[in-house]
Length: 346
Image 1 (cartoon, rainbow, N blue to C red):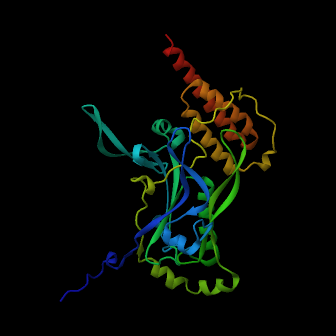
Image 2: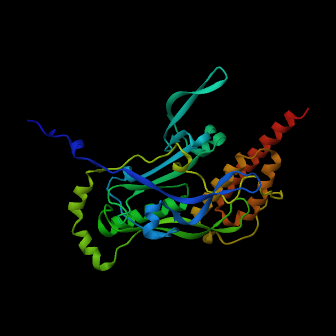
Image 3: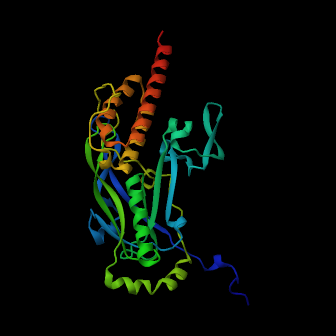
């Protein structure tokens, strides 16, 4: 009698289901438009079973990583979304998969997935037109909630991505592995300049840190080989990247677009500011990326000129190279917009 298939590693894999999502914001209703929009919170928005243990607004969550295979629990990618949170294009800076469309009658219908080169958002016309952003998906176990499945956290924050990966590397350095080590996910207040106004706002990024004291460190290290072999059996579900709005990554905003109007001023001359040594290069890169996206998405030359206010205000917060790139994109987009409007004028 045959009861098991031999010499096939896939027959010993243990697949953990996805139990839910750890979100970083809630939805509010705009008083002006009546539409819902996502707003950042300073706590994790979690399912009821997690709230039962850690309260309705937890700022820390004890977590574990169930496998050493980073490709399973940590995904980084560029993504373009369309209506209904439908994924239009996904890439890694080298290769992209884009959902192609064709016209049938008067309707646009899907025409399959096409692989192509991915130059990144700054060099891709499709990305500039549709809006493309880097995303990070992290799959973790909440051991006090359930050891039988994982939860997904998605973020578009560069700072959060760095802090998550830094925590993983810290654990590897301390212990020699990352699987089944006690760790903490926490919301951390960080001062980041607003790309539109230059005002320093507090945002709550995500940090992942090993929760290990000196007394337990040696005991955890002694179990490395057994845990490493054991964790190879675990397979994690693919992160949900599109579909129903409650399950897909959405960008966090502070207000509905168009509800605030900037006063345009000339952005050519920078304001005096802090020494270069005090500029945060991560925050600088994030501001530059956000501002370029805002400029490219502006509906008119007047709207682009309005962005000049922000460029002046935040120039002291930017690295020289980021400021140079931002000004170059501002000048290019403004010139194109003015030419387009001149042609359209009867």
